[in-house]
Image 1: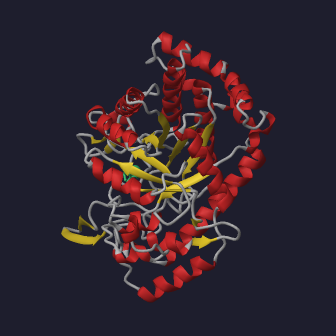
Image 2 (image 1 turned 90 degrees about the vertical axis):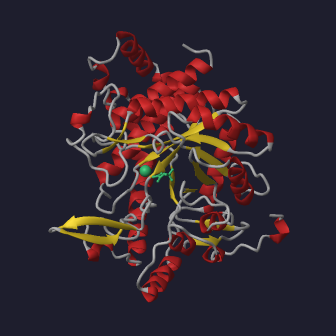
Image 3 (image 1 turned 30 degrees about the vertical axis):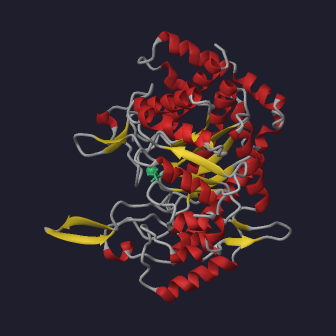
Length: 462
Ligand code: PEP
Ligand code: CO
């Protein structure tokens, strides 16, 4: 649509657009009251942090930086605990150091936590058999909307959960900010890393030797970070951290969207980097309408069924002026589909001259169910999608500028494979995710090592 025909944006213009994931709050008065409360509370992030992330994404778009995004599929209010938060931060930091080492580029860390409380669903209702009869209740849409327990009271969408989610995001961020200011100095000491699993019998001696060499030379990576103008090693305790979540609940997001003094435009202040999910990226829909009006960088998930002209329209809507640092395309094609689908898409975006960051989410296209009905993903498929995406982008004159993982710092058994050897039989040992299966600490770190190896090979390194 020509630009002068697009109606003006306001923080509420999304309300006029179709929203396939709208959750009907039964109590309109309570919704208005809780939104009003949210509007009155201080922001979770600031406009200058958002502008800084935009500059870093712009650098990554030019191939001078890499963006590592990772965290839970769905955070829960109950898991807002110090050790869980610290472990997630730790794995993200360790992965970033491994990637710095492999790529010799600065790496920006973006948590998929401190606000990841909303989940899109394929069906608005869930049916289960309870005491011999079938019961239908609203689906669980994440802790910002309703509770996961299968009973009518928990599943009723409660607008005050928006305020609780905001509070838990604030508590999480507060702890992260404190840790990154000083408490994490040990991170770059290898003894703090749990690398015992690399001695697992399943690894070839060559791979084992390579991991050991990479760990020993991580200090190189730290020196490079300094050389590249990142903070000094001593200063590494004050690492930079950004937060991201799926911008699904527009009642929540619009209530924290504001203008700020001395800057133009509106900022969404619940998060630095919101993303639009695979189910809500309709160029004419409510989510694209809302996010076209905020200054934040915006991610968009792109699955294998996305039409190329649809992707271009989304980009045009969200970033009509082709500004640097604004658009992150997060492809999630699946290991089998990526090679077939991606090249044409990358080519069209490149020929259109659109500035985007290509990031790969190798998780959401690779879900499988075991014979016993457990949702899992295989380490090999995840790695294969990453490698295929990386290769396709390079051969199309673009580059992989970021990755997006579902992971946790805990020792869960949700994804199969990797050097630590989680098998299908192990899945029930510690399956904690309420939603999608995540890489555990060891799988996440190994994934970073393998990606770093690929990046190092690209540079002609060993
Ligand atoms: C997610 O990131 O948890 C998700 C639901 O992804 P997608 O929108 O890509 O399916
Ligand atoms: Co998920």
